Amino acid sequence: MRTHYEQIKKLGESIYANPELGYKEKRTKQIVIDYLNDCNPECTIQEFSTTGLRTTLGEGKKLHMAFVAELDAVFAPTHFRADPDTGAAHNCGHYTQVAIALALYRQLVETEVYEQFDYTISFIFVPAEEYLDLTFRDELIEKGVITHYGGKPEAMKLGIFDDIDLSICVHAIGGEFTKRTIEIDCDLAGFLYKRYTFKGKSTHAGFDPFSSVNAYNMSTLFHTAISLGRQQLDEKEKVRLNPIVMQSDMSTNVIPNRIKVGTDLRTLSIPYMQAVAKRLDAAAQGCAMALQGEVDIDTQMGYLPFQQERYLSTFVKAAYEENEQIEAILEDNSISAAGDIGDLSFMMPCIQIGYSGFTGTIHGDDFIDIDPEYIYDIFPGFLFQVLDKMNGKIDKTKLYKRSYEQYAKLIQDILEEKEEHGIEA
Image 1 (tube, helix red, strand yellow):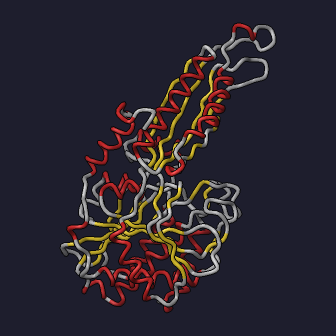
Image 2 (tube, helix red, strand yellow):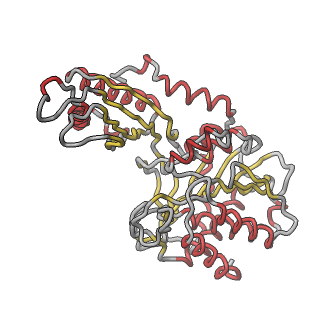
Image 3 (cartoon, helix red, strand yellow):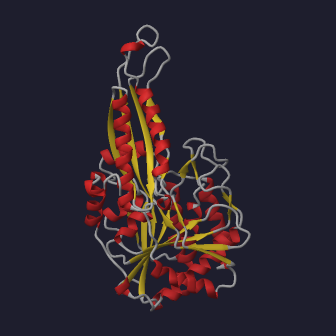
């Protein structure tokens, strides 16, 4: 691995310095294409959903694994290395994912070890993992370019994962660690995106406030209701809410008649997500009614919760126990962060291996790598060990497979917020 360390490091640094938002990762896409062709001039590259890529090694075997990397950056205009024109910044660590995947690909090609694997392996580079820049994505949806905001659900819809049996992802761990660390079995929350448009009646704020219906006051009451209701939320579900005023047209001399409040709703399970959504809707309706107004409610699916496949993690743990360069392991955590890996995990078993080597906060203004040797050299070498551990030992009867059609039905069922879960779920 060390032979190509400097090249991989420069590649990662180049992506970090030139961040691109989801479905816009044209430069990053070309970097990946150029590197794949340099490693393996005979490789076949399939392109999908504007900037997505897939290439395969060892075709035709009974088991098929995907190694998935994410191309996009976050919208974080105050980050110290943000793009001044787009506000994009790689304070998510995805730039290292891409470099790690390419380092692993090169090692497999140069050693030709994949030919001895009992499984096919595809490297899939997906766009748009971060749930943002929604106005642009709405335009793509209206034009029929995409169907989903997230890159993995879009790839699922396009059939990119139809012949895949299991997937491995990797992701940066935020914060500084004194030891080189990996993390396994860290489950993620799923989330809904809720929008509440409070509607009232405008009048002159000085001359005739008496006949008004104040939409801003409804939204304020709603924020209070959410705050008071947090006491009733189940702590083990790690519920997170972040209500903000998304849209208003206020002035000091006119009583506001329309305020839009948006919030994400994160939970570790789907039934509880539906239950809390019903509570929020009831609170919004009650707050509007209390002040003689109305509220329109719109619910948009974000990502599904992600429960890592513990069976597959046993191979990672076994490789770690034989590795002398990685000093620590974290296990069985759960956090309220979300990702579209949750959606992919509905279709097939997935794991996401965390790796340290950074300073600052994930999605924060100061996030950057501080241990490139670990990230770009040691960790890809460890992944090579993991793949070797899996060779000939994966029991296919322990895997599951669902279709995109089943996934689409699940999303529709969640959005319908079925009555059987109720407010007391």
